[in-house]
Length: 209
Image (cartoon, rainbow, N blue to C red; front, side):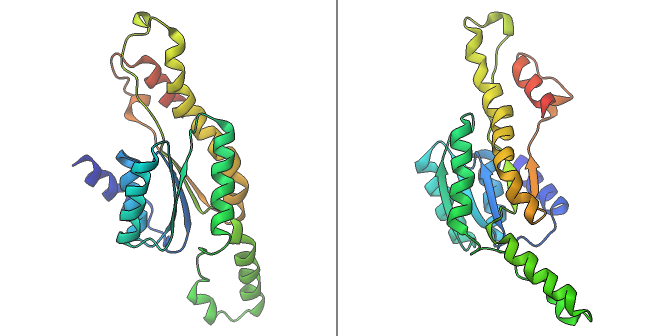
């Protein structure tokens, strides 16, 4: 029920034509990331799916191809590792290399000004190496009182993955997104304004996002 509601909201908010666009989704092996991958696939987007579980990624990728995505790659990466995040972006850009770009809008065929058409063609060429959508979805949860933690450093992965993971990926993807006016989709939580009990670090992390 939750996923159906989420996807309904997604369809309303993101109504652009994503057919042929390159979409990178982190945390795509399960949960919201997995279902977002299916939604993008049904609309014809090219997908780069990232997570730590390769077997699950392969299953999701196979289903995305069956649903309608023209091309899907999987990238095993840990978003808490900045080096992994850079490789994730580099691999996505290198693989698609302009093969999945959105076509020129058909209405330009009726434009009176020839220069407008030429400028759009040049923009299309310049966008061939871009990532069109970045979905920062990877995240983990933490349950327990702060004062009950035997080793406080065990709480670090929550911040490293949920917060810094989004920062790292966005940092390396930003130049490619900027070229084509791409989108950054950051998933947050109601915990940012309605703190959940026994989830102190988790609540603070989403407040940062």
